[in-house]
Amino acid sequence: MIILNSANNSNQTREVNDMAKDYSVQGTTKLQREKYADEALALSTLDAPAPSVETMNLMREHIDGKREISEILELTIERYRVSNA
Image 1 (cartoon, one colour):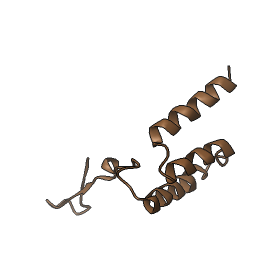
Image 2 (cartoon, rainbow, N blue to C red):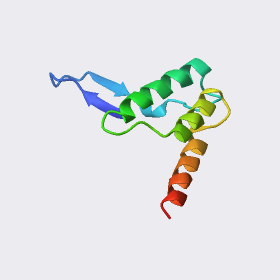
Image 3 (cartoon, rainbow, N blue to C red):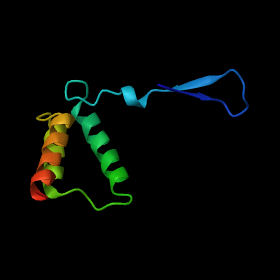
């Protein structure tokens, strides 16, 4: 959790708690997973090429509730590890 002091140096604070969001299949709806995936894609392509078709297919499986993000990350890293060996 990050605490941000207000610009006028008063005692008011604001908590930013985005890191505690639950991105799991059980903790989200399909609509939420779609939104999160769209936001992540937009951010990831600001200074980089779009993800591969394989990675996009894995994200579709997460949106559909078939795979967790941690599993997708492991599979994606392994695919690049093998292809760069």
